[in-house]
Image (cartoon, rainbow, N blue to C red):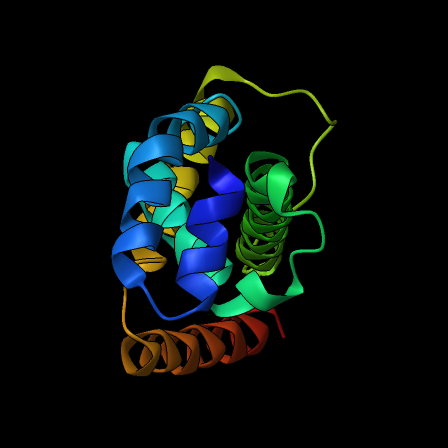
Length: 149
């Protein structure tokens, strides 16, 4: 069934791709939701899976393996999401933060949860808004450096 829909999509029938989305969207959403706990990020990544799929469909070698191919795309996007999260948390940790003993106290755990929620919100900013935020952070880091000297 997927093979025929993929062939039709490659021939220009985008209604066929809509049927592929209908067939696989619940599976992709569930797959991503098991690995990421932020519903808005899950929705965004699920959409991104299908956007990537439509733009890269010509690269699919075995058209009977469409569902597995989608999961591969989802895995790559999830890895990139986690890398962005990790990079964002590392950046936030560098801003005026003294190291601890490696143990998370309750207040540190709550702070980490807040950081994750902020990071999720920041991910929804436009590129221009993210750039403005970066400039503000850089200014804050500079001020922290001045205060420490």
